[in-house]
View 1 (cartoon, rainbow, N blue to C red):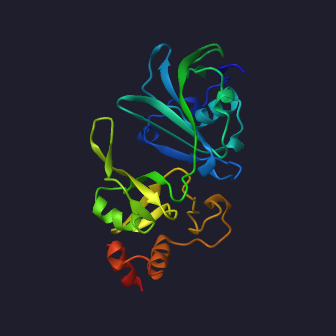
View 2: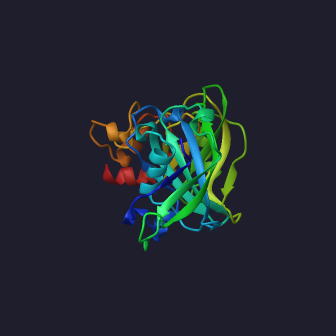
View 3: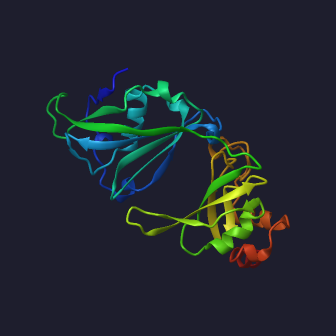
Length: 275
């Protein structure tokens, strides 16, 4: 399999997008086979240069899929999702999230590869930009097991939720065994993402209604819940059940009696108002 491929035509999908959204972290669901992505793999590559000069742009989603299928020779059915982002100190980076585990040594034999993009003003198919790309790494996801010390990530989506509000929720699912670490960006500035370790006694839902916010929890092998009905065993694209609103889910968690009202924060006032 060759590590070089060339686009035969120039289209809007081939051009570097200028919109701000393309430079931020984006996750795009692919039409995968429906296997459990929590037991799959991650494959990452970054764009190092264009025509031997630093590259400050990005690839479009169409180009990222092209690299996956035409250059790497893989099937779209293997992929659950793809994400891409860059920072001030890091090259444009792509992550493919796969539905199954792979043999990384056989996935792609070379550490680097080229991608060719026809120039917008090209007058022949031989007039193209050459992108040098490098694999960052592979990793097979090892699902967390109950009774195991697990590193978890908690994304609060703003700075209104603090560790002392998160801890009571996590304590319902295990023993929090360490302090919370703040994730920092490339400039060393604190973000709204925390990390900590917990001795899991039961699995944690992906979404928790903590202190009036919808908080996202993640760790290797976290059971995936459908964003449409909030039940397990399938994802939104395969859901055949009636859509459940987030407030219905919050009220459902409240009605179990497993969580004290003060843990929900502002969600209680909203639920009482619409009751």
